[in-house]
Length: 352
Image (tube, rainbow, N blue to C red; front, side, top):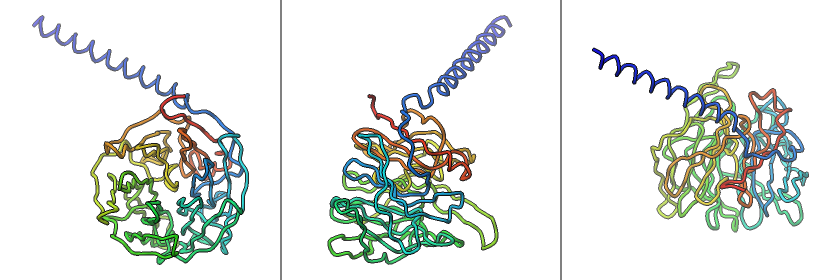
């Protein structure tokens, strides 16, 4: 009997110690959140839902939404120079609908290519495509994509750009796409290639050693019938992997660190450093924006984490320049606070 009591006491002591240690760790994590992220110059114009491209070590934010109405895109072309920690405005996007929101961009041959996105009242999906020449600070119209697309992805591979995922329209019905097209900048033409294994939208992506890796926030979202304020999500699972040589897709059933709908890197050209593809912030199922900073290691095909960000935010921009991660724009908790979400953060991955 005494031995049973002693055993019970020991178990209780270990339980209390475990609770104490976990509590200390939680407090420590909360206290250290964002401590290694540096506050930089605020974004020039508050915006979210923009696409992001890094060109000549400068971060270009293209289009997006400026106010509380997420269906009212703008033509802003904002540029951040990490060397001088300063923002400037360049030639706006010359779209006839006066703006592009939730578009797709890629960098090729020293120029920025911009595809689709939503434009006009209701943010209807667009098939338009443009190319930006930084030497003359000017945009030129390209051939339209075969299909309208919003919230998809564009990835440069060799001498081509692959375009995939997203919606045809962002008004009900959502009509997600599994089609994939290969765009050739030298001929300004599109070629249909293998379909994705499933629909995907809000995609963080990169190319690494012969493969495109795509991490979707959602498989799809249903916005309800016109006039019905109904939204339902099917969260993305695992990682989609495309073999460029064999023109084939596979799905890697790798558990996420946390399910997230929108993120900060979802519309960015190549938010990767070496084999690390970064997935920052976002809106998890509990509807609270997270400050989680994670990555997918494309070499080992495993998820990992870096230091948490100062606050939770989503729908902004995440970019990598010269060994450092930069975050800007988006919103903290809801679209209503977009006017306050102007902070730019920098994080030296791997140490100062």
